[in-house]
Image (cartoon, rainbow, N blue to C red; front, side, top):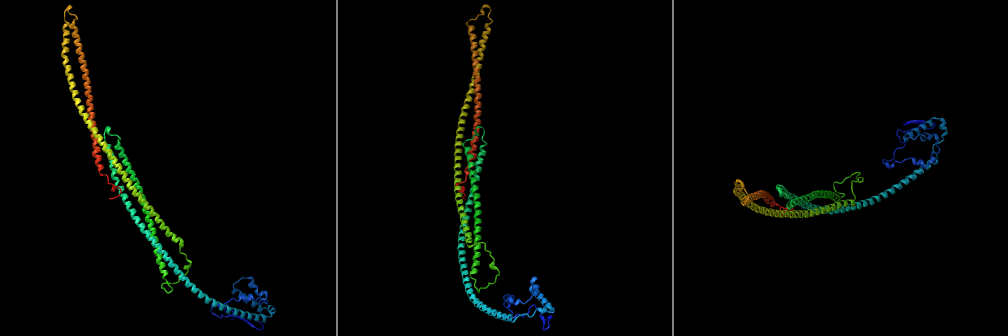
Length: 487
């Protein structure tokens, strides 16, 4: 005990502990605050002086510090006679009686509150037990309904995945056929380009832009156009296959998530209050790991299925377009191939006819050259034959110029000899002119012969290129099934 002070009649001391009275119960609910009592009976504080509350009203400190300050004030009061003379008494009997009555009322109120609390608690426990059981049954029912929804969407996803796998296999087969058909066009394109290359070896006048060349150029353009369309559709098929596989992956991932969710919910649906493996998970109800709502959950799978259906529809449409393209391109290439062959046949026939005509003309020209050469020889012989008559006539005139005197007259023999010389000279002149014409004609015939022979060689070269080089290569054109991708 710690000594506080003493008066003339009593000595005051306080225990070492911080409480004035010991606790009457070990339960936390038995401890109450004594301040409300003072608040309920303000008259009990009227007898205290202002100096008694001076430290507590002026300095807001904790309760322990307040009690120490209060003890200090009391000690000062006890030891100070002037202050002690002002305090006649601490409590009145009326205060004591009111305090007892207040304790009685509080005890009765506490008992009634405890009884009411007990009855309400028992009823609450019964109601909550029924509510918990109903909630658990409702939760199990909801989990079962959720399992049914998951099973339904799993079946839809499984059906859609099977359809997508079938569509991917069909599109892959069409893509493979398109690749083979594209590879088959390389041969005809090379043949057409080789034909154009060989026909560039034609010589002179035969190097013409004829129907064969136009059709060959058109065939090259047709094949390249078909290849370009095939490549575009092949790129689309590759992109569509990638989209199909991505969609299949999304469906399979959704399917895997559904299987995991079904396994978890099925395990949760089979859990009971007596099941093994149950335990407390503090704060789990405050966590919200969900990323979706029921509507968005079903809409997500429905959107995946709708997206897969749209991708399958696009894939099916692309397969139809590729089938149409394969048939159209094969028909175009075959038609142009036949047109080129017809043009080659016509050109070869025309060239052969021209060659035969040239050979005929060459034979006639050779015959004419032979006759012209014979004519030239005849003209030369005729000229040689006119030399002697001319010599005779000129010799006669020269001899008659030697006649003496009056005998040198211009008689009829003289006039006839002069006429004979002039006539023979005129004949020789005309024969020489005709000889020159014959020689010129012979030169023309020889040039014609050379031209015909050169033209014949050109025609023979053209025939060799068209008939032997080009047409022999064009026999290896792919068949219709190979052009549409079938082996």
